[in-house]
Amino acid sequence: MFDQINKYKASFGRLFEAKTLKVMLEIALLTILLSFLGPIKNMIYTEVVNKLSLGITVKLGIIMFASYIVVQVIEECVSYFQIYLNTVLQLKLGQSVSHEINNKLAKVKLNSLEMYEIHDLVSRANQTIKSSIVSSLNLIIALYTPLATIVLQLASLVWVAWYVPILIAVFNVPYIFILVKSNHRRYELERKITKEKRVEKYFVELLSDRYAAKDIRTYDLVNFFFSKMIDVKEKITLEYKRLCQKNTFQRTIATVTQSMAMAMALLLTGYLVIKKKTPIGAFVLVYNTGRNLQSAVSSFVGTISTWDQFGINFADWNRLMNLEEEPEGDEDCIDKIHEIEMKNVEFRYPQRSESAVKNINLRILTGEKIAIVGENGSGKTTLLYLLLGIYRPISGEASVNGKTMELNLDNYRKKTACLIQNFVHFQMTLRENLAPNDFSELSEDPLIDFANNFPDRLNTFLGALDSNGVELSGGQWKRIALYRTLHKKDVDLIVLDEPTANLDPKISENIINRLLKPNYNKTVIVITHDFELAKKFDRIIGMKEGKIICDSPPQAFAWELFEKHNSDKRSLPQIG
Image (tube, rainbow, N blue to C red; front, top):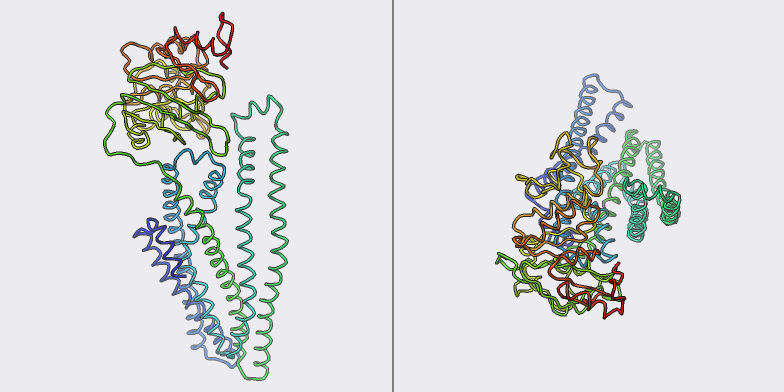
């Protein structure tokens, strides 16, 4: 046990802060005190019964009664204080574990998060692993509470007869073994159905999501999604039913053996009382001790099971903590992005046989204005993520200012701003949406002039998390995301995926004119399906099937594209 604790402590050392250890020590001291108070109270109660059967003086009765009440009050006070400390410990450990998990996930290579098994691992991290770690570390001390109670309670039965505690202990062994196996099987089931529970959660959230409700109602999909959710629920229920059937049978046997031990101990004590080999209070002692033992044994088994589950969860925790992280990079900051280059870059999504992009050779210089065009699925967005350093090439090299991009990602990202298609609608104030990291200064911009119509202006809460929250149109959310992108400080590279989608023509024209101003010295890369828009840029990159098929100024680009696809020269081929 101590070896196991030391091994865990090596992995969770940062969770054991000084304050946490202090609380655990306090719980340990209270645990020792509680372990002694139970048997003392039983012995006092036994003596009361013995004296009553023989006749006692009023003075002795008052003393014994007062002693019993004092011990009872102390036990209750200590118990409540221990509950309070346990709550404090749970909170501290829960915060520490959440911090460790979130801190790790913030550093994990984003390529890894595309893998389904990593989705399951992260899901378990935020549910099973987290709760198991908190429970286990909280019960390092609590493990000895029921154990001490069991030992002291059994020791008190020696007063009746030396073989009574042995009898009860032997008959409780099968009970402990069966409960441990039962709890172990339950964890294995939880691990097995992680994916199904994640799917179920998705359908539950989908059916209650106010954004999805419009499509679901329009296409009359309520019953369709509900039936899919029920199918998943039935699979989960069937697994739980099988587990319940097996555990019920075995737990029944375990309970019967434990009850037999209690019954035999009471019968034996009754026989000794009748034969006047022990006072009548012994019967009360055995009865009270037996009940306390049942509770202590159940608690002990629960604690052992938690450790057992944690031992299995430990592998998940190690796997999560050992996921490959993005490199911290060089200490030298990037003062300015002068050049971005890709040489023979290839990227393939996990569990896909085909590469999303391949043989990418690209050089982008400061201040260039570039449009990327291509059919849906041609690799445009993947290329965008590679340019931003979100994804790491599986082969080839992406560099910034002649240095491998991966070696300086943190500094590089500080110099970039991006608008992706599936940007997040942050449920918080407009001010916080516009500049989450630094909203001390906000610039006047026509993009957010609609805020003048809000009673609280920039302090208006957006979304449904607040009862006074304001819901926005898709175009207004897009304007907020654009403001956030265009006003990020100290940026050299701006990347936008379909920047004019969902915007009215006046706003779209304003955005494009701003990006293409001669004195706008930032590098701008946009993904667009609008060729008329693409023609306004200095350079057009055409993609098909994950490859760059054209890379030239607008005046040269059209003819190359026509020739490669044998299209009608009067119009461009369908781009998507």
